[in-house]
Image: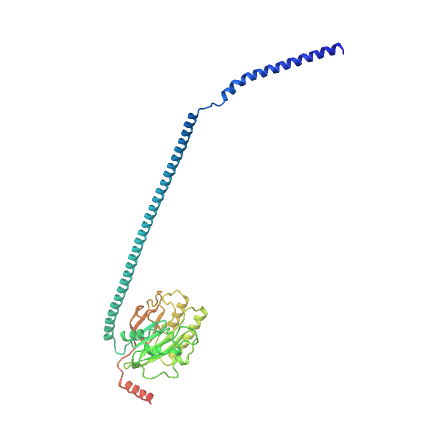
Length: 405
């Protein structure tokens, strides 16, 4: 081995010894530091009495905690029960208040209903009383008018009844109560198999001329219920309603003769349905003109009545204007100038030539006859009616005897 290698080995050995010494010194230092800490952390041993006291204290504290917990639970339960009780009481009060409110509302409704019923009954009673009062006043005026009317004057009524069924007694009473010589009825709704309705509606010594709507279509129909004293002979074969056929309106005629008249008067009662197109309306005017032309051949005095369904109160309408022109051309006079229908229109007309009309009035008799139309009452007599000469009477009697034979 060389000298240098010997020196290096000696140095290495010395360093190794120094390192070991250093490590041993550090270990002793750490050993001396750990001993007091370990002694400080070592558990303290207690005597038996101290352990029992500590156990009792722990149990007492545990028991006290449980009691406190039970007390808190009891308080909580009691609070919940009180809240539930209060809620129940509140609910009961709410229910009672609701029931009280409902009772009050019911009482108010019953009170209001009773008041409304009483008001309606009162209004109905007042209306009936007013109708009765008006009827009484009208009857008095009618009686005065009858007493003041010139000889040869008859009283007529015009009404759209909208079905005579179940109204026979009312219609008969209407005739007798108003002392009508003739009642002109529109919309009889009578069919051929139910003609007994006409006879039931006619008072004693009254006759009926009628026309039913052809086919199965509902509605329509016209009738004249008149006193036998005003007709001396039945319809002839040349009666206008037997010669003229119409499709736009229905009509029936009755020839009347009075002891104080020097000429007969023809009564034409027609019903013209609503809802016509311009074409249909012009056809109606043409057929109506044809009827007038036929009537003029035999009669100088006649009355045309009925529900025309023409708003003659609305002069600006084209159909009204055309109808007025037809009346003017034929020298006819229309006498009704007030509403005859509940909608406020003048539909039911009285048209004449050479016949005097007086005392015309329109009366709403919905409490007597259920209808949407009003009754038109008026008096009539031929113009120039006066005392008959003996020659006229003898000629009439002779003609009457020939008719009977």
